[in-house]
Length: 326
Image (cartoon, rainbow, N blue to C red):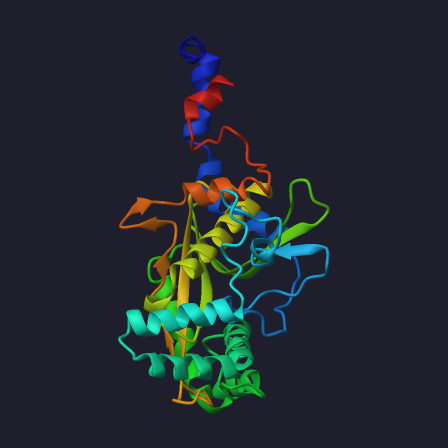
């Protein structure tokens, strides 16, 4: 390699890469490529699962990042049931948390679990409805637009909270991305290894920096604050995000410089779960690192078992001189 760089031709090649216009416009190039890759999907109208939130509507031949994890194909170290809590198991875990972590008596915990159980479908539908409302409106829409979006949902009575909620979410995620290219409501597809089915991943908000770094923010609407989410729920979100990274790789977008975050949105009900009283967007949370330490490798390795990568093995950011040597 050093011999090649010592020649005029090798030096010219190195300088061409070092000062490449492609580097200056890498973010714009990724933006244009993503625009061409976006597929049309709609949010599902079904309530879904209470601890999953909204999903997108697909045919029977397409998985989502939620349904692939819930399917019989998905396993981690041979454990195929880690994310498949049925209704009773979910409520049993909830009861345990109420008594062991929140100090409720057994009777108090039982009553609260019975309320959740009796409002199961409503809570799941409300989470899906709010996600759809936030995805279909803009911060500069007037109150009538938000009321129209909330019609026939539990949020019509708190429609005045919808615009401030959306404004806070976007202010939060945009504060460090003033010079980034924003994208919203992105659906991308990939083929699954060894299966006839394909997979589609949904991204709520994506920002591309001028040098091509990507940050993804996905909303997760819940009837509980994120501080009370159990570890299984958080783990499932991490695997969903890992699938998103692999879907980007499948489409030729390097996932090495992608940061992944969740934006929790908390729905608060009255004591009997009859009506929504408050919507609280929380600050986004990094899901690929803890305390600044990258923890996502194991999740990426699992997702890589299901989706191929079409990112070149050698990228200009990996090693300029290795690429020149090629």
